[in-house]
Amino acid sequence: MSATSAWLPRMHADGALRLYAFPFAGGGSAAYHGLARRVRARVEVVPVLLPGRERRLVEPPLRDVGTLVDALADALAGELDAAPYAFLGHSLGALVAFELARRLRADGRRMPLHLFASACRAPQRVATERPLHRLPDEELLAAVEDLGGMPPEVRQHAELAELVLPALRADFEMYETYRATPGEALEVPITALGGAQDREVPRADLEAWAEHAAGPFEVRWLAGGHFFLLDDPDEVARVVDEKLAGAAEALS
Image (cartoon, rainbow, N blue to C red):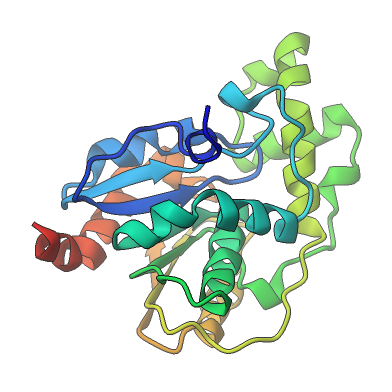
């Protein structure tokens, strides 16, 4: 397995506009299968698979956003320089996508055409009042289940819980220890997506993504809670289609 293919488990079509999709805490590439089936524009959703889950289960999960971005920048260098692309990240994934875009700018590399920040407080407003990664196993699983990001069956099966807990805990540590550093706004259109019933991402904290957009910025509120991406991927797909259809058509 090559360094790039480890991170990108799905083959992508040549010539398509690629939407690299970064997962939420504990999530794998499967989290974006629903979205991939629903995007109608000539856009291919390319899920990014982090260590410690799915076919990378035996690899130790990473615990720091900076370390993860370093690894992604190295592994995806050829991919991101080869063709136009966009980024989408949900919750933790939005911070990873944002920091990777910053890293690419610093390195003088091709930048994404668009950044979709989904269900995530703006980087400068990431909350740390409830450090879930320090909770005992059962409490951590219960908290994630309460958010809607895990089926109840996981807690009911000790073997399954044992498989998901290392990556889940590492991802929450990554999110909860993240601190944004000052920097110039990105000259990339940013669309912030929020769930109207999301208790974790208040309106003001989502709208604060505007501080990082030197170009066009918009907030879209969708029905659902923190995991509206899983509950109703059709709505997310419609926003992606609207924002990327023109760029995708230009490639055909």
